[in-house]
Length: 260
Image (cartoon, rainbow, N blue to C red; front, top):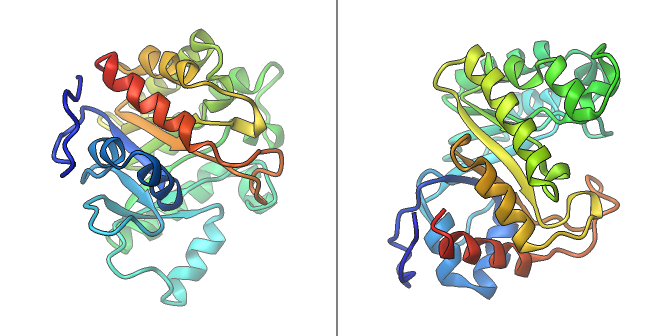
């Protein structure tokens, strides 16, 4: 639905849910506070890390390994008031090899521990996990579906995020992966909340707000919302350029204009 006039108080309620880091939300708020609050300052937004002052989003923390999460719980290191935890297991150095090679087991462990702490669990297995699994040949997307990674994750998570952002320049390919993975997730866990990834620069690629809009429009009826990434150069994304919050702002403004 269209926002109509975006109120300074950010009282407008939007129809889709979002996941975003506190840093990215702050970048958006600094350049377009009205649109940032209208879209993101909602109880349904999963806000990773520190949120902008006064926001009413869901306090969420991101973990790239089950081991790191277990250590944080044992050490009493979870932030006060935490409501949700994300397990972002990928084929990278931040996720231990053992966890990459048996994602289902560690997703079960992560979710059980998170639920014991009263937390909502968000499972976000990346397509590149297939490099360490027996998923046959083909593209990451084909093997991701063949190995049913979203379905396995949905068996334990309250929310599943489909990391399809590498395909967002091709709305058809993006939609195909998201819709098929969402079906697998729903079959494994009826009622699971499904999000899809969108990025202003996946792996350093040049993206436009229009391309992000096309990907969102193609999946708006399939998912509950999106993980909006505004990446910059970091250990987790060495190929990424400087953060591009203006592209994210253009995307959100386009969503409003097109009534998504």
